[in-house]
Length: 357
Ligand code: 2U9
Image 1 (tube, rainbow, N blue to C red):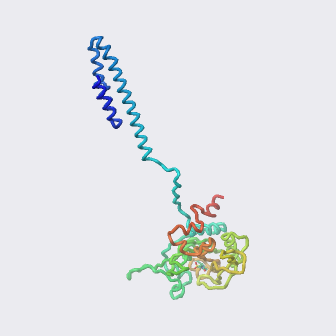
Image 2: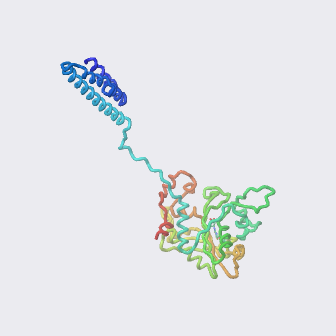
Image 3: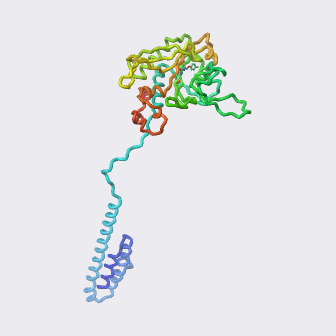
């Protein structure tokens, strides 16, 4: 009996996981186990023998059961200890920074401008960035020999010698989109055309791709007075000021006659722009009455209709409004530039607010 006890208590002590322990239990106490076999032997003993062996065997069975239960608890404790040792979590660590996207200032300003003109009845038109040179130049009263074609530092699309298709360019302005809008919708028309434009020019203040928004209003009796009002409303809304003074300087563009460059009264106190007051003037856009030849190119009769047009650089007005001094903020992928100027994720302005009003 002592041999049996020593054997099974040792086996329990040596079992080093749950399945080994279960195997020991089955071998000792299971139906075919050694202790169970001994129990069956009791039946064949004399009553005296049974009286002596029975309690001892029962006590041994209880002792082995207790040892198995204690060992099982010890194994569970050890497993828990191991998990606590390996799966620890330092809740005092600072949270990982969230990587969130930001709305690009160009996109934000495009939406701001779009929302302001939408409020005044202008719809938005888009067109191809690879444009026929007819839409980009000829239709805008810029014929083949015109110096503006060279001045605009145009990117011409490569073409094979036997290519008979009309020449194409990367559009140098969004004006061809308005030509297409006239062709498609006719008059009356109120449309703005924001988008990318391309010129082979690269220095501190120029990038080969930049963004413009142009506007066009055509009706029976549209005048420069309407142009002035629309631009005043735009400047007030865009720069968020109650009053603004515009100065129209005579200028020249092939597609408008008369033409004017438009300045706004401003001051640069302490290096920050204040619109609407001060002794400085800031040029922000070009404009004019649409040239009759341009109306004709868009299949609109200049004897019956007239219109105004204007154009401005989105990159430039974004820099002015948000005090961004350097084009690198737009074109380098280092988001610290943008965060520095306060462009937070989903901080999208007027258009969405306008739509949900
Ligand atoms: C049509 C008829 C007329 C668009 C116009 C300007 C004046 C202008 C510049 C501003 C700064 C381009 O980004 S910039 O370099 N634009 O000065 N744009 S009038 O006139 C049009 C357009 C389309 C059919």
